[in-house]
Amino acid sequence: MTAHRAVTLESDARRLWAAVRFVDARSSRTIETPLQVEADGLHWVRNRSGLHIALQVDEQVVPADERPPGLAAQLAAYEGAFDPLPAVPALQVNGRVADPAGRFVARTFSFPLPRAQMPSGIAAERFTPVEVLLQPAPADPTRPPPISPP
Image 1 (tube, rainbow, N blue to C red):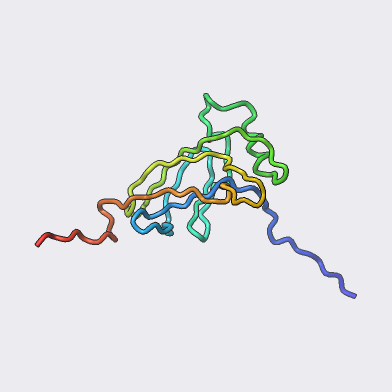
Image 2: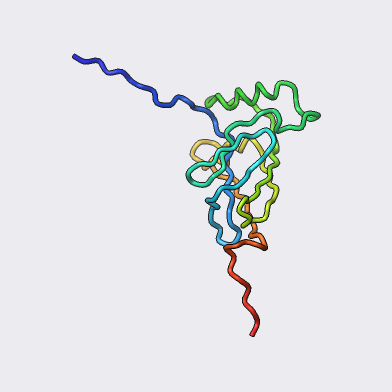
């Protein structure tokens, strides 16, 4: 009789804080090309669906003069727990997005953390991406030329 060994391929299980979907205001489609996304205290990862995921949050998300003591430990505990969820103070994320290709106008955006949790059986806000509309830049090379009057 041969014994089989189980092999763990990946063991990184942690809570994701939020997803942000950047949307083309003209077409209402997800912008799939790379964008520069920044927000103090957040580590972003772009997934295959074009969503930008707030993977990690650190205490820099709150300005130093407003930061409650022990915030770093609370955020770390929240990221590593699933049930029950530890308490985390309400946070406001303020970010900026820019398009390196110049097709969209750079803008700021904000959203609350942690995302709302609903009773089981109801679609929770935390599973719905935050949508941020991006307007086309005046010099967008993919924009059709203006129609000249006759």
